[in-house]
View 1 (spheres, rainbow, N blue to C red):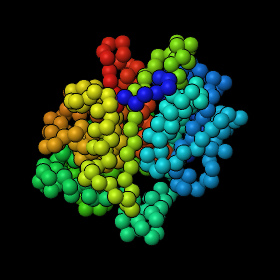
View 2 (view 1 turned 90 degrees about the vertical axis):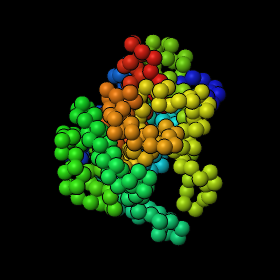
View 3 (view 1 turned 30 degrees about the vertical axis):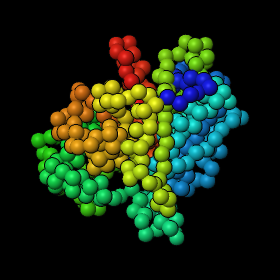
View 4 (view 1 turned 180 degrees about the vertical axis):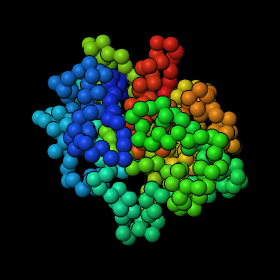
Length: 365
């Protein structure tokens, strides 16, 4: 793993309820729900927090520098703070930045907050108009693309690929049904798998509405602390072992011929002695913006070279009771408050580690 100046742990996590509309609360109040839950989970108050990180897509709500207003809900008044925005990856960037801030020794306790209230803006309009007008405009389709579907169909045949995608979606819905905070809890029935796949509105190519993630209102807060602080507080930690970031832009050459997901996984596994991710990882939290991407990216993240990832979906290995549980909360297909979405994955992973520590050793990447 990467050498750190100090070990870092997650000691508290909190989330609001996710929904298409949270009209009963304003933005600071929505964020406050997650912050209070995280502080209670860590048995801390805001006086114990040294720095607050804030992340969302301000373009979507059309509020400039929203962290200034949101101190009413974050409790960040008078504290050092950083506002981060990296699109759909904002939540993961928050986690990486919080880990680095604590590991560096700059702060002992960092509160990372991801947020979005998409009912108050127009996310689709923002996404489809944010490309560089010179270099990327003709390539920009936003979040809606049928390329993953086409790739899987070419690899595994139309019937098998379509069945795997809708099976992935149904399993995620079954997980969401166990999560009272999830946005879309549709109670999809496996008996009607073919009808579900064919009778929902088409978006692009083979990508249909049922495959795609939602636009959600919601917030997530995660508290990171140094090893000394963990010992001082007697906290129940989920240690942050490592993280890796790999980028590819439309105007830059990425010579490996591999997806960024696969490159990141290869580097992360090599540093941490993981040679068989399917059997060495107990629970996997993945950003899965559509069922098609979910199936495809599962293969990249697990370094599959054949159809092993498709078989995992077909054989229910990714179900909660399966050999390799994927997104027990329902994942992004169930809830997608964009600025918080990737941070929710980190929070869910941490909660899995803490919950299972008493019974088994649980490793989550």
